[in-house]
Length: 112
Image 1 (cartoon, one colour):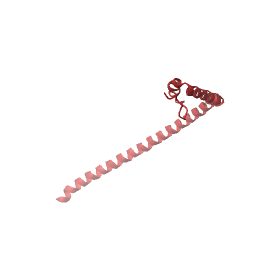
Image 2 (cartoon, one colour):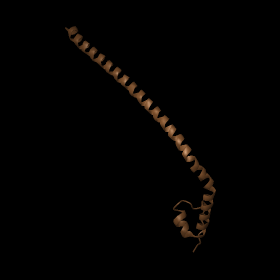
Image 3 (tube, rainbow, N blue to C red):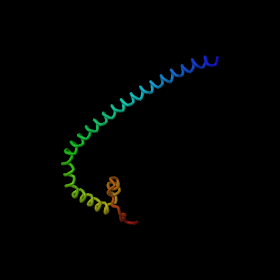
Image 4 (cartoon, rainbow, N blue to C red):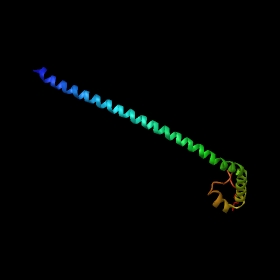
């Protein structure tokens, strides 16, 4: 009597296990397909961005060269501003500190 009750239950479990195996196989196959598609898309995007970066580098080259040529002039102007700010504390407080151009050394402010 015990054998007849366990036989239908064991065949039912076998069917459920077989169904689960086929579901897992299908899901793994779908995962592989989705992963492959995502990898191909990301590779394509990498290629497109690389071409865009090359174009941007060519376009920005003259701007960078102009900045490099003008940098000594800009630095000299900043130094003149700092010199002026050292003798005019109001200018130093309002402009130089606002733009973080205050000299690194402590300024000599007159004591009262």
